[in-house]
Picture 1: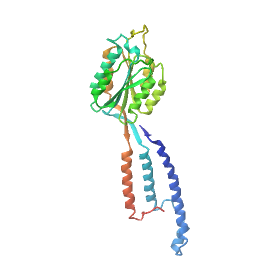
Picture 2: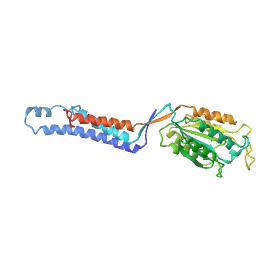
Picture 3: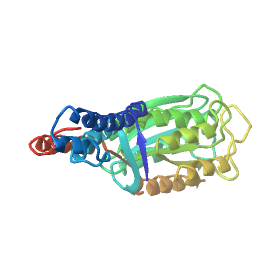
Length: 311
């Protein structure tokens, strides 16, 4: 469980609390001096009593102080993140579209098998889920913004083809995927499918930090057979950096799946779609505003009693 603030700069207004307390103490002492202007013995006797911080005015002051605190917290976008069950998940499919995905150890190749499995995953997603699609190689391409239209998502998957930008930038794929769901408080999951290792661009460690700061779970799928396969225009055989993919998944509360055939890819997607325990974000601003309204009503009611003003 963790509390974060989407607008933390507003928290600086909390420095006004010591000023309010100082003003409260000063007004207590000021009232003592004012009492000397009266000639009756009762007023004079009050002057020489020890100063009390806990007076009948303290309730009115405390209410005002709480209103300030809750107002600042509401303006700061206070959000509570906890681990719980939810079907309202936002998914981002990040599919490797580098040249090595044309390898022939899958029929017709790795990319086409990955796309077919991804479309089947979309069909089996929870009804209230949403999805975005990105493809990556040496850079990352947003194929589909976050949407609840599953048909549009499948169309965008169909259109993914091999990218001409060389290399594989997993770190940038994580950053771009995170940005697509960054402002959402629904549970957020990235499914990253690749057949290689990060060779260019953003360091994966920075991508992991960025993902964790956004409370996103990452599942990684390594696609490729043990013997490997040749890809178009090259005699090289791509290898999967399983250690990196396991580290990435582990550090973001996810899981790594090794998929050496089409059924394994589909089983991986199926297991991920059935996960119900997620990082859930709860915006506390509406609750804080309700508390502020209650305190304002309480403050108004106190105006009809002996607790009607601040010292």
